[in-house]
Length: 224
Image 1 (cartoon, rainbow, N blue to C red):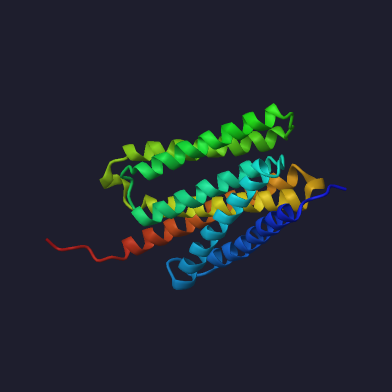
Image 2: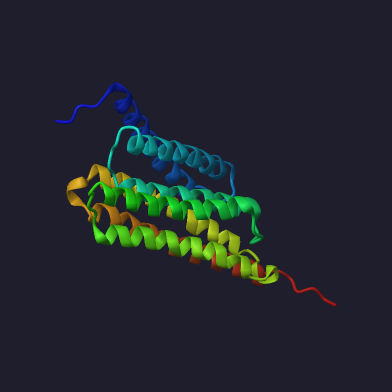
């Protein structure tokens, strides 16, 4: 049985506790009225807890030498959360240096961790590495491509981006959590939450797309 120092155990406790509470708060954000007070407050709290999860995860790897590939999934969750929050704040596709820097940093972090884990001889499931890195590259590529969309056509795409990214942050964190708790069932315990998250993303986006279309069609036509 491995022996952990008191500081290491404290870091693990904070990491697990913050992650568990973040998942519960994330469920609240998903189930409450979008744009409402509870949804907004729970969303902000989810992001704050996500920061704690990422920081304690980094401490676990670099200070206590915990060789966990699940941290890469946590980094993905962090980028999803940051970008989803920024999308809601800006509600536009005008490029900002902070967003560009975050995207480049997320890509650099993931590839660095892959190099780091390979250098220490760590093995991982191909389905997890390909899906995780592929998802990150896909979303960061979109975040750069969206700057090319004309402002007039961008419209309320920001809403669907926010939905996609925040649910992505939740499902990525859930993947890391279930992959740790149900380690004997990997890789299924890691990628099945992502499948669930994808279905939720599709469902919520379709729902709000239809809702917005219905609202627009009910608006009176201006008489010229």
